[in-house]
Length: 521
Image 1 (cartoon, rainbow, N blue to C red):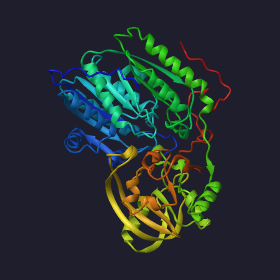
Image 2 (image 1 turned 90 degrees about the horizontal axis):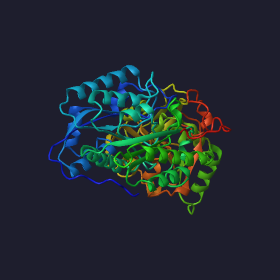
Image 3 (image 1 turned 135 degrees about the horizontal axis):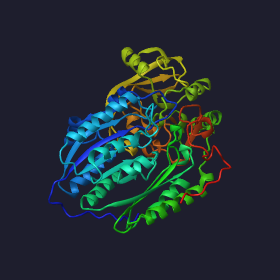
Image 4 (image 1 turned 60 degrees about the vertical axis):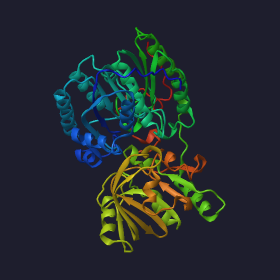
């Protein structure tokens, strides 16, 4: 990437930068996300953010860590914490709580003195039970409080949706470039560099093109494929006066009017005063994306075939170990992490010597802790969950190990991040090791298994509840060609036709495969 970003010299003044954010990737079919989902995960007021900034910062999102680290290197500055609200991906946030959160943010900004800039740590695919553009609501509120001249910079997940309201409210939006999202520190640092340039007087132009296409989540990895090529090509165009090019594929299960691919090009207004370069570059990238729309496909493996492959691996030590990815029940996309379709088939086929992680079941984890290590009991899955795919099932289980609380990630998207899994238990059911957790996180971090006594190098078949982030966590032991994406039912299925989308703006590809589209002037 040819970066045009150059840091200004140390400022004589000490700018005050407000820090706040709302981060929730919303799956329309998942249960409503309430306040407890945030307070259980990450809901930090000003004092809470200050405490995290004064320690190792591992309790903060990676983008915010990167922003603060780069700001500290760049100039003397004063962080002005407001509120950080982040919950695991799930259903739309309860609107009453969303309004409450907005009021806290607004009040914090209004009472803060001398705000010179604002950093927004967001996701971009947020919904409330009444709004399709929750992130836009946050952005517009911030702009209304700080006024038109204060620079506002935001980081976004590449599964986010950019809207005209967001574009009008924020000076620069910076999306991840990688999927799995291993560049969060770097994008936060980039946001700090842009903030430094704006504090030195830079003004920006930005242009958004929405491409009417919804892509399967498994087609959006950035190691190879059309999305990888598009992002790489976009980055090759980043040279002055272009400041940033962000290409957000969006999040299909959001099922919102905001769905679609968002292409945002931001330029330095000194070299692009009329925004022509931003506009022409965004249109060019949109044309390229649209011409490649047929390449965004998915090739899943049926449960039957996946079970047969697992048998072959278990019966032949010369074959490499494999991961079966339960992509349709990904907690990282709003799945509950508790479907039993693969587990039940393994039990039916007496497929021993396998490991499953993580199954999210707070009630079962608590029961295992009540019974204690070594105990054998009747484990009932999903006793307290009545979701559409949360089938209740009972089997005799032995408790092998117990754990609880937080751990520090060491690889991939959770590297350097403190994650609380709640009560955890390692159960053994007919030769199958199953890790049960209470807090809903996708199994994308090797520490989640290692802390339960699992030796990853010894595994033959590992089942993970994750769509793609596990690839960056487990690549020490499992090469891409040894990963099998399984076609099981669930809230996060990458099969677009099975998502029941009713609220997206039509026509849109691939729901309308014969549609024609031209980039708007």
